[in-house]
Length: 249
Image (cartoon, rainbow, N blue to C red; front, side, top):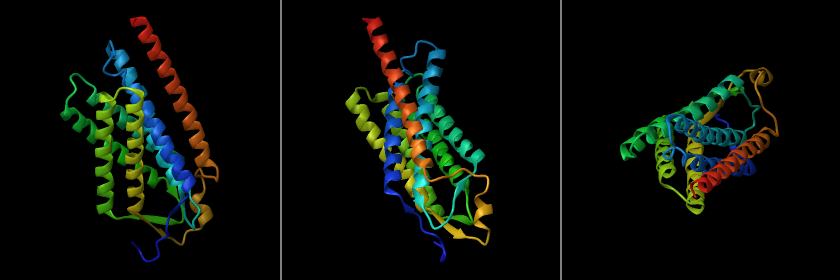
């Protein structure tokens, strides 16, 4: 840590909201992932992979961004729109890739390992791209030994998520798995944040944050929008599964 580094104190409400988003997203993704191994053709399988990957990646990104906003510093911060959007795309694409690898053909632990590595590196990439999107009159310095730990957590959490996606069935099991995934995803984020120190610069704070997005209610807004979207997707998925089960009967 540097002598003049600014400390980050997390807002407990936003930190709690970030965990809730991670849990809801994990549960929704696990629910959608049921359709991957049961897909009747390549088109259905692709649709299921994209839906589950978007839900998981989108929720992980929302969790990350809300938790970033929870970081309170004696410093004005805004976020570069292009880099923030890129971080979201990296998160969703890596989750889709991980699910596609793990869910192709016969289920094996080797595929879980490869898919978990792909997804975990993507999630870590999403996190650090999101960190790079911070606009402020300060530079970020990293403790790379802690960065490495955060990447390992991301890979392990992703491998566990993929194993759960193809092995968990039943509401209670999925909910328990989602709670665990929420802890793992948040763990990766906060370890990654702990790796960073913020060193003030001589730059004018107003010009440093110009052109970025920010605001006091941005975290709560993202939480609200993400929750509504995930809940809608989850409801549609449950209804479709019930219809399929009735057709089989």
